[in-house]
Length: 189
Length: 253
Image (cartoon, rainbow over all chains, first blue to last red; front, side, top):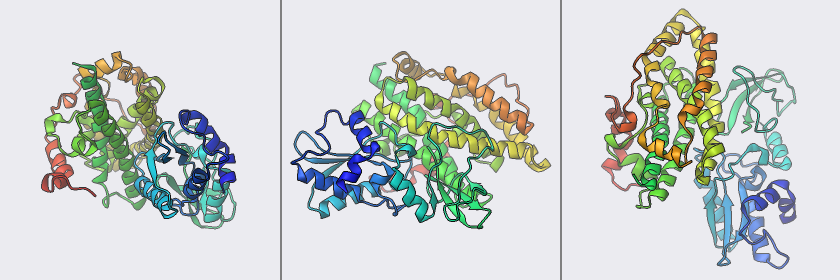
């Protein structure tokens, strides 16, 4: 698990961007930190339990502060995401259950983007019935112009947007015209 | 005024816009014309509240007097709120609500983008980067509805036209820099709202053309919100918004 997480470009990229004054994510000898990373990475998202906080890229880093205490840094997906506190508590609790007392820190810079969802995370979303974000976050669409979203169940591209705003802040609501199933689309931001 | 005071007030202006408009959108919960819109309006209200919370927390840190997000949101008096008048206008019908949303999002989306690009404050930049993406969704949603209703049935077109007459006079305040905002602009904390006026004009013009709506000529734009001078509806809004903290001081979820 540790190896899988540390190898993803997301985690590496973040460490270099905002983890400059922290200890490295893992060292060869720091088994406590490696264990903390493993535990924190495995915490499922409360609203989309098929993926973990590491899959979604909202676990930014697990490191030791100057006092040697474990710090798990998390970032919200949307400004008003009601799951933010639940996620922070879930990570804190999971670490406590593993005997690790950690400090949870909320980071907002750099802002989360769906580009940070790992390839494994995208596949898990699709298997769960949620179409993963299409394309990269920089794009802007004109009025009434919709991206082509493939149905996560049958794969057809013959789908229609029901609403830009779905069951949670991060999802839009779609319908597949081929298999007639409604589905959620994880919006690209 | 000292730098910290003006910075706090300037940030509160943007935070209050989000809080008050977010509250207005929440009033639609359970009343929207269809389920999808009920969800959409609640979602957008949450975005705005989330942006406001982050800004309140940041303003409290800059101020350094121990005030947090709840103090700013719930425990100020009406005259201490510095939101623009547009966001406190009543929901009226769906046409009014969508037009208000269009006016606001067409301003805030580029304004957040400018904050993210130019602010000297790293926290503001982080809040802005996320908020800009959210406002892009709000703008698309509102723009599409204004076009649908303006170029829709006789009834929807008449309601849209009435909403334009009613609300357009509140758009001037979006671009007027208060003394606090002027200081914040000079210090590089916030960009000048004027910087996005042409973009706002172009967005509104293109939506109105498709929606077959006329842009009214307003000779005297309404203002006062940034000075704490609010309309008659603001007190009623605050009565509901603040009720819990006034009735049960210090209550926490």
